[in-house]
Image (cartoon, rainbow, N blue to C red; front, top):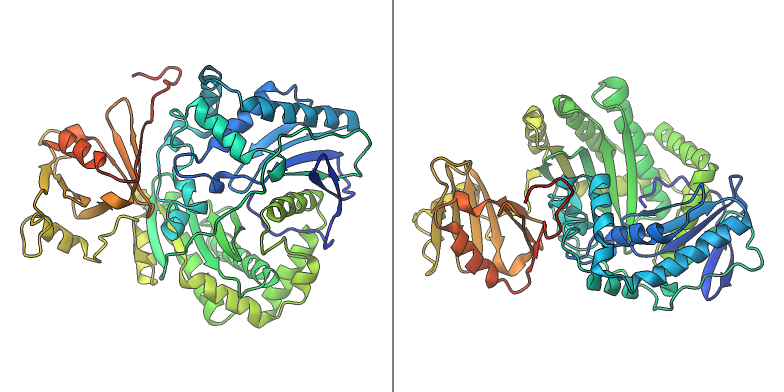
Length: 523
């Protein structure tokens, strides 16, 4: 789960082990709770598997007689099953969860469909399609970058894939039990055995600031920092940034109601996420507030008062029971992964100097990505970002670095042509179709979409996911995080040419996005 670094002051919890599973516990003033933490999240899956942990979570809870106060969650970092109440209630719940996790290894296809539909009801049908996630622009379709295609194959996964995922990821080797009181006699965790999990560190490919647009997305500023910045410095830097943006965007301008900063550890470094709930008509004002604030903090640095206030907020939040439980859960995941970083403590924050915070802010800003809603009312926001040094990007840029005009010229027999490739073909949008005025050029090694001045280039070797639905729409997703959705029948001669091109893709996973019909869905 993302963290806001509201951490308690204890440097380390108390420990024991039950049935080979580590147990972390502290006395927390709240309803007694038990949290079975599995160190596998969305970011640990391949592009074709991302979201499987959510489906498994539903399948497990379907078999568990959950008492009041019991639930489960899955997210980028971990999968958690929890219950509150008496020792007996929690023990019975944990035993049921362990047995259900074992049962998932024998699941059949017939057992999946209800939970698929339940998840669609939970997340929305539009989430089954890929998006240009800011972290996929940074990491490609690896680690946090797979969030852009999360649940893409929800209606296509087979029981065999679910069983395989459970066997590889959901076992005692990935598990830790977190308790808010002392462990009691008779507590058992009958989980299947398995190896310790490994989370690979993705390569950060961004070298400059970038801005992009995503339909239905909130206004988000994301960034990354490296191992040279301490956890205490980055925690204070994010707190300073969050409070300063809040003061500018909400208190001064009224362009947003909520501003929330969070982070994920990525190897020895961090990925930051700052989200504003600015409505489309106020996005330009909110973007200006964000950029002005970021530039002030990176050029001038935070003031002593800003640093003092941020430190006080972190230390005050560290006393909340929810923050203490969150710290334990995060520590459980990070320790299972042998992470070089652990949750920040009060001591970490107390000894940080102003120049360390300034350095972390400068580093984060240098390759920040601004995500703007794809809404006509937010058009000015992109222009403001570009003037502020954020380069327009889509994840589908020409690999030779050519401008959209140069790509268009190349597609239509101007010197340096794409069509000079021996087997290239040009497919124009049909006159009476939504694709009127657009063109798709299919070459040996790439596909180029040209649509009213916009161009998108997809390399055949980078094609990772190809999803088709019952309406014959096709989703093409590349390892760089580029996403293009086409309806081939709207282009002259494209269906056969596109099929032949996809068949030659060496790494693509081709699947049916609507293999399992939704309730009330047509086709």
